[in-house]
Length: 327
Image (cartoon, rainbow, N blue to C red; front, side, top):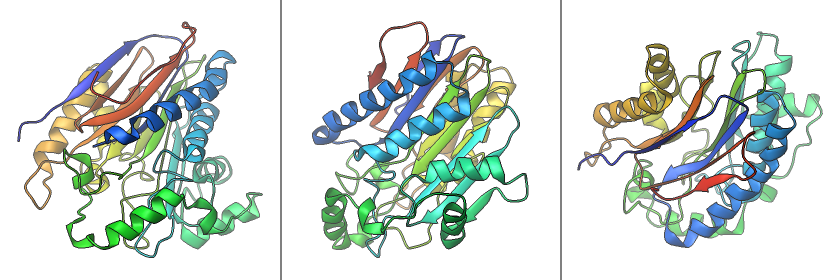
């Protein structure tokens, strides 16, 4: 099957917030919820752009809003693991210092991206990534309320878990990101990248992981260089088949191409094409996904999935841009 690759470049040098709600085979029935979610999140993000919020705070705020909305596979609304529990991962990074924080396989954090940011700010280089109970103990010790897992479970996802359990053997994680995916209600990662008024860049990514995953499974989202990356030259958040994204280091691949002279759009397109060529699913199909990218002078979105939820807000326009289809 030939690769279908969609992209758009945004030319702007001022403050900009770019978000995504996942790249996958989004069904028609879910389009309106995704559009509403993007619009709501970008309205929250408007203040970050207009009030000259620093980039790290901006991506954290936007990603928290994505986690809270319910339409996306993060926070409340996350897909459930084999035990029927929401198990969440998140990572965040600032380009100013290359500091990052990540939490994985958490079951009692309402907003894992907020805990990842706190780890970034308080770890002092001693610890940057925490898993499961360790992440939850850190959150509790630093003032984050732990919540019962059931409060993170959307009724839609409980129904889907019961349905998907009956066809678990057919549910390879790569299939939701290609046409005719294994489950029409599957969802994917969320994320944000931002350039603030000082030119500082930051990136964040959050996810509930793959549908019906084994407890403890961790994909690309909380891994710096795979699910997210930020330095002085580029900030990236990725989405798609996590095992493939981790294998090729998708966020880092985009970074290397930007540093070699590619535009944000060209770097994203080339990196996604390379992943499709190099990583194959058991049925022979190439790995698909998407990413959002911001540099000091431009921004871009690219995806090889049938659809991708994405949007942005700049400081020079009085409206937001968002889309879910291939336009």
